[in-house]
Image (tube, rainbow, N blue to C red; front, side, top):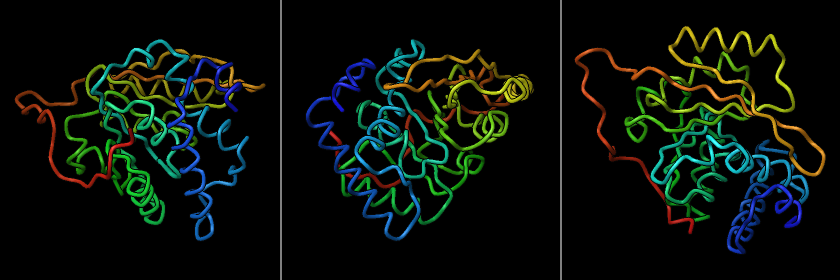
Length: 243
């Protein structure tokens, strides 16, 4: 596994490997009562979940350059991919895990607590509700990620209000997105005063192709005279520090 990650330019410290193995065992235990993921063998879990989640933030320059102190959100966080991976590998970020399914949200709360992840928090609602009701997201996000949750246009419409001006919505897509989906997404982005970038393609070792489609928010999301959100809102529960 370490050679696979190294070939993709993703270096993990020994304590990162230990963290992700604990996460894998936590997911396997939870699978006994809910359907989180079938990809729990070591090759599948590390290659198709952990590496797939992390790689855009190493391979795509615009994402690699997001600085310390960022606020991120994972829409449809499910078993915690990519949200928990980002929380681990970007320890100065705050990461909101948006999950509307109650059992999955409860799993995420338990995983955060048991793994000691201080810089992640669960938002148990859908993205549209989270944009206006979640106190910890009130200062708006620098990055919103969406992996295996739907078409680009639908996710852009649902999650766009979570972004600050200049923030990026990152759609994880397998291989090449269909042209019809890209065209539909670009139209929706333009309607919402956002800009959809061309897909960024990269290799996922050992033999897969992946792409991300980044949508940049061009709007402040505020009407004239509306107050700016606070720099950091209080409220919400957190666990212990991941690192």
